[in-house]
Length: 307
Image (cartoon, rainbow, N blue to C red; front, side, top):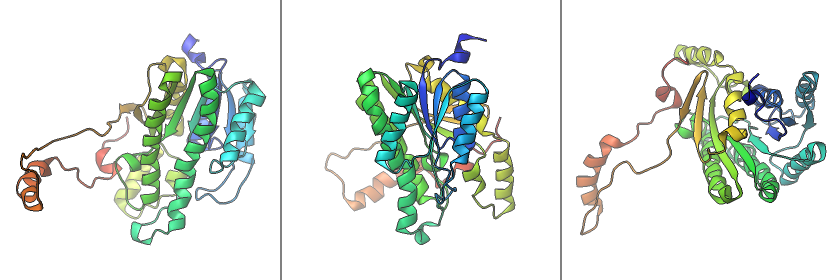
């Protein structure tokens, strides 16, 4: 066993949405790497309804059976008071908190012109407000100890696009901005913040309908990408091995890891006398149109089979 195999030894980590899927695999991998883990999961459905303590408890049992340390938390990331209790749970159980993984999420897919305000707000509240609540609660502790690592989950839907997911896309792209802000504001305290865009089969992916042979073929490819493939990158980013990495976005697709781009100017034009609508149509449009982004979906951009 190499030293890196225990790269989280002595650290405590909070993982939200850790009862199933990607979150579960992250929690198990973090524990295997030596971390003490708070397993947060209220046990709701993919749409955010209901509640069940069993998923979180089951992961705690698995960690403990393997000789690791874990405690369950059933709080709702949408509630700031619950987020504060998650941090308190880590401090009470382990005496410390070193990393946070904002993984919790729900889906309320609907084509935009039929999406209700409630459906939009519900997804924003879990993904974006939830990530803020948990990050804010942990940041107070991280600042005092002058160390800490955040890993937030974005999505190819947010970075590229997808049908029927205005709420999810807005939330996931918002998380990118949240992560970058944390990296900028808190870097002076040795606090790091990065995003992961995962490609993996999960309950949430499984709820997306496949209404054509092409969509069915895409789903079959997704099924080959297990959630356990995401976990090593998360463990790395939480560990001191990634001490120099902050403000970045990584995509993980089976055995592929990609550094994703961030917004920068593509082309520019200047006109000494300024612009009016007619001159924009005459000069700017033909010059810049070749560089316009097409209305791609994530499947158009990531069109090759996972490696």
